[in-house]
Length: 459
Ligand SMILES: [Co+2]
Image (cartoon, rainbow, N blue to C red; front, side, top):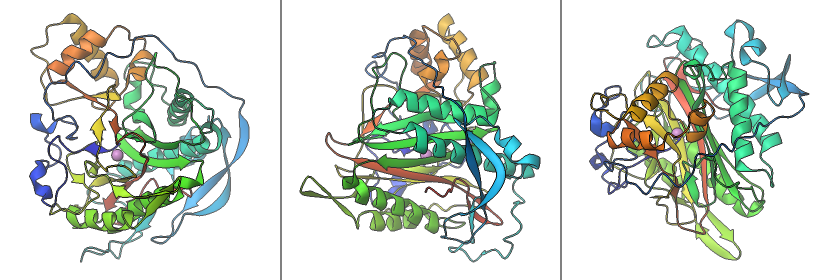
């Protein structure tokens, strides 16, 4: 899930001017708690929300389980694809086996592990994965969440994402998979805080780059073979959020666009590490991304790095921690530090390379630092209780509220937004007719090296 730069503060060669250099973990009101600068626009206006009605448009995605080979990943060297070997463990399709059953004793696969290259602190302790900064549970929870992400996206890629499928069926298939494999359906109060979706499934077509998810009552959007689809979903276990995204196109016209962005993201991952500076990472990403062009119907378009959305750090239960990693050259001298978690993502576009808010709502995020003392509307107070009990600061969408049986929440939500207690996220789009792509991984900077926790054999 990308972090948008504030209005009027697009990334420029002076990246320090974006006002986002607040330290982690102590979000101020201007920091928006989630740390995302996203909606640093003050009060959310009336034009972004109530276009959808409250109809419950949910349909259960179901299918006959069929046996599938489960492949286990193993540790390998930097820059190499995962080495896979067969194990007797099996996942079903649709996925139904808890990953905790597939990996007894909580021995989840380790992500792609690379030694640090940008620091004198290069470790000679590749076997010591447990950072002194983190508990053992931290890595176990992160690796479990990452394995759920890999298994669900493998299922989505092979079974759900096909021309003719509705985006709603894809979103529900992914979300059912995540909840089932984590063992938390999230229907009982508070259950989704143990494990489940890390943020709403993003399914963005063509010029829509980020922050779009189906809403209840919205009209069905059918995936076409000419579409470029970004799939961005998060899995959390105990608030340890894995944020990872990929792009699918059925038409080879867009191969170069996808390659450019995938390579750009991998460049960002390679450049990341303890002491690595955001400015240097951004410059390296941009150079790779913008070395590509795409020919669409006889016309050539340069691939542009999108300049007002960024990668970001991740804190427990907070998808956007406050640090930003742009994908363009900038003078931000912020450094990555040991113990931090980052979502390294990049977006490329055949359009302007600049995103605007679209009408509509992707999701909502509780701003933990904003007091609810001045909240008087009963419907807002009751809605806030539901949000705090079920989502905390995890970004959620209307479908997640409605599967809990919550209805008629628009007035209450408006009040929560007016008080700054909840922020809403709008879809982010480049110009009409353009195409955008995204790839994203979550990395952990621990003493054993840089662990690309969400790496799979797919991307
Ligand atoms: Co992200």
